[in-house]
Length: 122
Image 1 (cartoon, rainbow, N blue to C red):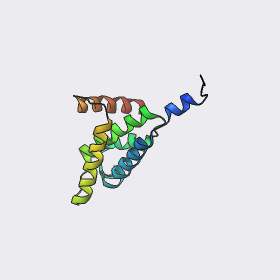
Image 2: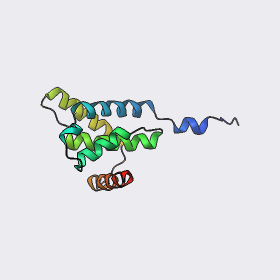
Image 3: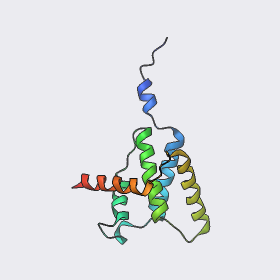
Image 4: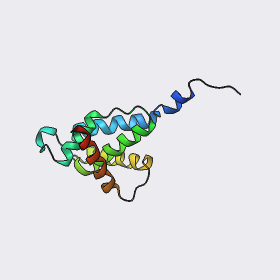
């Protein structure tokens, strides 16, 4: 039996499909989401934008968590008048839903996560 010394490194790598989805969702959040200067400092969207700017997924699990945050932000705060762009955002949201583990109480989970991230800043 051969032992691969790079096995743990390879298993921790982010799959290309996840990386592409993350990058595309991040791009759409930055282009079509609300701008930080248009929000109140303690507004939920503002807090999430701060956290999105800090995202730097290093492995599959952190990439999935980043996609979960981006999915929530796009779903709640990003909408566009152009039907083609809105359709593309819907496609991204559907791709993310396929990847993300199913949760029955997503909004509650996201609020807890946001509170935890917000408390780390203080």
